[in-house]
Length: 259
Image 1 (cartoon, rainbow, N blue to C red):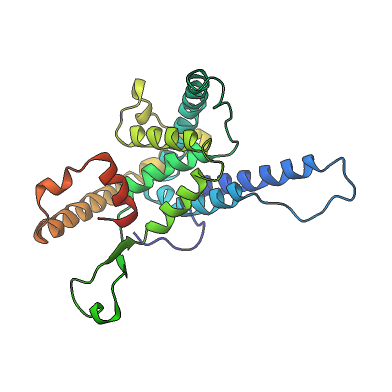
Image 2: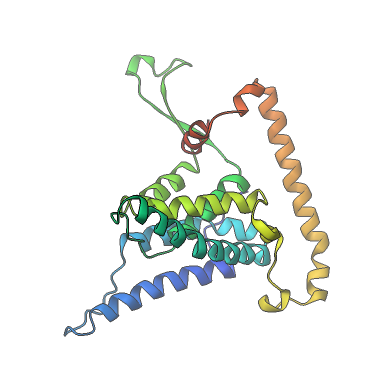
């Protein structure tokens, strides 16, 4: 799927971007309200900038799933993170004797939940290699280098977001990744992964949604067909079945290198 550089047909992503940037600007102004003069130039923190860029990248999820499913994913992830992250913070505070007692503000958990879904749902379009060999070995087929993909920059930005307030930013990032992976695997308790926002909340009528059922089915069939085609190409390329069963560290490294 080729992502067009716009926010067309992504109302939830647009709302999240406006909320994130507006809230950061408002809080910055309120912090300076006792000082005169107040600078009209808004101050965007590093977390706000990285979160906005990543949310813009994840707009492809809303186009792939539809607004209703994407809104359901955001609400369920937010609810789970609201309970999980503070609970783990209390546990870590006790285990570290009060040292780990800070939770950074922002949408880091929600960003990493979307990143987990982005990793599973969006295929890799292309790969490229940065060579680390000498000039004489560049023309050889087995030239050594580091393999990247079109999704590597997204992972690097997410890693920078998690490390902005090290080590406190790691907790919401880890919780977000776990919640997003659990939602994709339908492992959330109580069938929360199958819950959907009522259509009337998004202004959708039953007649309108019924008219789009065939279109949604066609898109899902095309998606499954493309996945089967990618599996066939991978099998033809000589990938051994044992290579798919890698450890957690190997899979995490593969997100950056697409190996």
